[in-house]
Amino acid sequence: MKTFKTKKVKEDSANKRKALKQDTVKPVRRSILAQLKTLFKKEKISYRLIPHSEVYTAPEVAASIHAPGRQVAKVVMVRADGRYVMAVLPSHRHVDLSRFGKMIGAGHVALAKEWEIEKLCPDCEAGAMPPFGDLYGLPVYLDKSLVREPEIFFQAGSHHEVIEMHEEDFKRLAHPKLGHFLAEQVNAASG
Image (cartoon, rainbow, N blue to C red; front, side):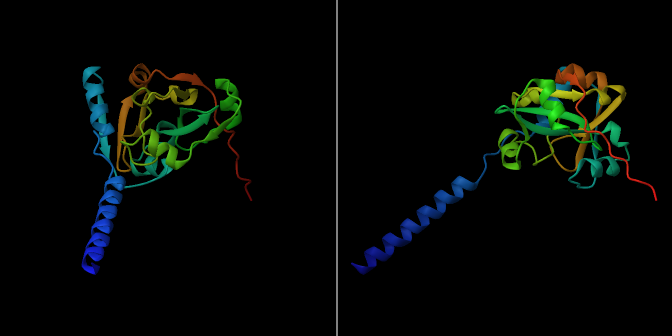
């Protein structure tokens, strides 16, 4: 009988490990980059895919591709009255959440947490989502300061590739709502 119990315990333990492994293995999904390439081809949009060293912040992206921060778009995921939206702005600037909330008519706005972003955009590396909300069922808000730039750069779903595209083509594909929601820049006092 002891042998039976030991064997049963080993089987139960093995089954639990197998179930845990199945729960933690994410299903393989088509990458966002493949979806973007398909979209660009379908819409006859010219773009350039630029590989760069692995970086994690928007200013680092701008520096790694030698582009001015005002041309590198970053996506900030915002939770507004319980729904999610994309705020797209220059890499070197910050969202004024109060201004953004007023602009979109939301009473409560907050930055989405990393786990929320990973759940919303499972085909991207965390924080590297491209500014195409339609691919995720999310509205896109574009700060007007990016409209002044003829070319924009944005992350392609990873921390080591960006896409360069004409700003007009981006607007045609992403259907963003335009507004002004940048936080005021604070200039450091000179000494």
